[in-house]
Length: 395
Image (cartoon, rainbow, N blue to C red; front, side):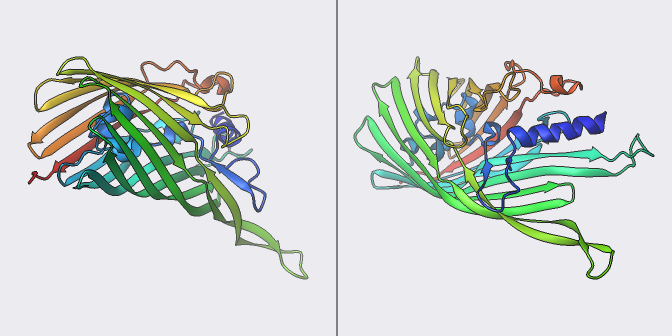
């Protein structure tokens, strides 16, 4: 039963939201759909502590990717962030995540006259899943002790440059441009594949202060498609000439793939109710229809709040949705997240920030295990991010 469930889970994964979609048998034109919203990383621990509302906030370390208009560097600034994504189950028998991503994000920023500049690295997409299927035979129906492995990883690394220009005292505009590198590795039973390609990333944004208490931000995020080849190698039986015998050898094959990303538009507002308490709200439009025919475009909701306990400690909490572009009945990949975090000024020049994201408490989508007749393996995620920043003394 366990073997059947695991095999069915693999078929379900490959036929719905698999990284390597149907048609991989074609020698060219096969599409790699990077369709898992849950695999996109959450960069900027302080902003994600408040529900991912960084598009409307000034001076956030993750501003190059959330809204570059929010860059503020009165002096040299350095930021480093890592994340632990805890293991979970995608469907019965499919292990998802359970990985340390370090570094997740690194940046160096500095002023250049009125302009703030930053350069750095980011891991913007990190997919990892795997499973093992126990072998069973007629003679040994309980299993032979041998297993067959199946899994895949897809990672997207970005090297970027970012700038923010203050149009006036109330408005700033910003731009981030970068080169992304997509690398994919997959293995199915005795077959394995590796490949990768490059493309470009663009984030453009603006921030406006309507008053000392209210600000609004907007940002457009775009990543180009990346076309690359994957080389498969695996065992194949080949006949010996002029005999009836066969021999096994490894035969490499190469297939062309295209990695496609959704583009998105963020709009958010921030309100400082008091000197200690702020509220933020935003919406993120995600265009998935160009990634695959039949997929829906989405609007994700982001809500957050920040409270200053003291001059050194600031707490954040929030909520955000993570819908799925695949509008299938009882889709198990629909999630809602609660977030919490802290920023602590350890020293005048050093800040420590941390965030916790979890979808166990407020998500309501069904478990995929209900279709497999196995125990409840509901897909839910949780992660912890930690960032540390240093700001040089101003001259």
